Length: 312
Image (cartoon, rainbow, N blue to C red; front, side):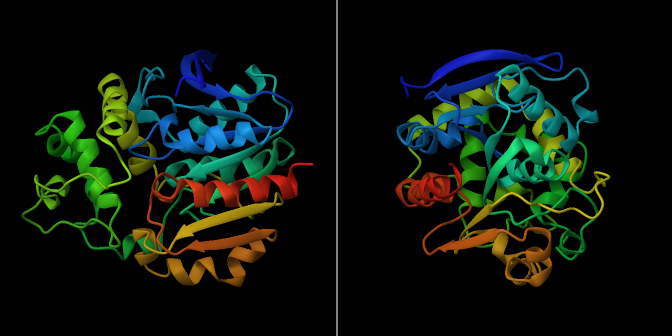
């Protein structure tokens, strides 16, 4: 990825690792998920730059090569909202398209509600409009559901701590590439769900895995376990939300998130259309939770088409 330039930008008292490619007034800001960093967007950043956009991605605070806040256990999604707005200010960007995947979709949606003047459009991968807060859907999941397990202070730390960082990342990529939400029995931990002989998904190389592992060797998992998992059920204080920006939701038909209670119905519901009236939803037949890494050309085509439609 030699074309992509890297720097650290001080934002809200922390030095955040920023990756950039391309120039010009039209900007796409990419927001990653877990267990990812900026690197998850490598294919989309290059495609956006070739299409005439300035493509920017950063490691969230406490992730990858960004600094860890002094008290990670006090983190919340509002941190990511404020960091993203402050980063745009620091880079002299008044308005941007926000692309989010997994946990990165939450701050994208929150910014669209709280700072609509800063958002030209949204592309979300795998996550229809949702806000942090209590969730009946999560409550309906069994006790061994990975989100519930990782919300318990100390449990994921002990589970992950049995393995090196590279193995933890590999196992999560394998689990999250499946069609069912990772769920353990009472006598299991989440890492036990992966047979050690299971290979990486064919679209993720050993080199890719090494990049992610080196990032998490730097950051560890303290902040990522807090945000999203241990703050996901905390009300973010937003009432009567409305996303006015044009929005594209890309769902892999094999994304395990479609198995969450009522999620598939919600994606097609009038309730979602009421909150996000300018919404287009595309289902990618062979896509999974990492649709943009598994099928980059297909996602890039959808992304560029959306930018061309709304970027003038």
